[in-house]
Image (cartoon, helix red, strand yellow):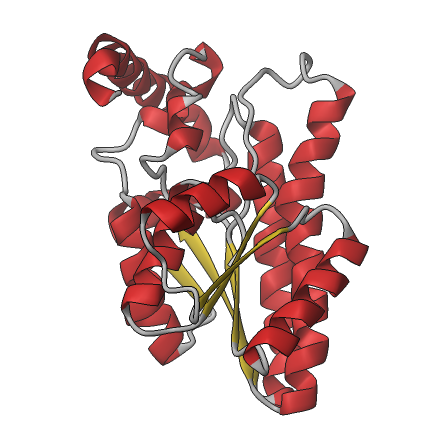
Length: 269
């Protein structure tokens, strides 16, 4: 599992351990990851933590090989690590453009590649990639994130077709906004108003439940969360002009939610 120092990845690793699985948890911030593992008393015989920069193909090779050696094989890879910085399309610095695609897209590609080679050799396996509903409907204010997640979804669906004959499944999960630190960093950005336009935020529990309850046992191609917002996203994907009509109302709703969250910030910690 990647991105385990915070947010979805951290919660997912804990849930998988609680369910009795062996977990190789990784993150760029290995200090925070190890501190969390110690604080939560993750069982050392089943929980293994390592630093991984998903942007580096060589790092993927080394860490995945260590995971195979440590656990005797890898049955499931969960590509969770992600990056988001809101902004207008003309304002992004070059390094921010690179980081979105290096982390969100290339990180998933590198991980999928190394896992595929291992799993093809075993004749079984499952790769789970986290995309976004922004991979269905482009979201103004987070255009780079949306574009990088479009790429994740497209790559995942193509990879699924290639790998299925080898007994390897690929599932791409497309959630709406999730209440994590990634969402909190968008609160003060007017450009990100659309991220706050939904009726409720998903929780990390929603994502882990989808993975353990649906992705792992059923191995579907795609999972959308929640279904109501997914229908709206698919409509915008099929008929892009609908997004132009819906945007003003959705942004007003999002800005109202942002303002409420700014007022509640002390209580949110």
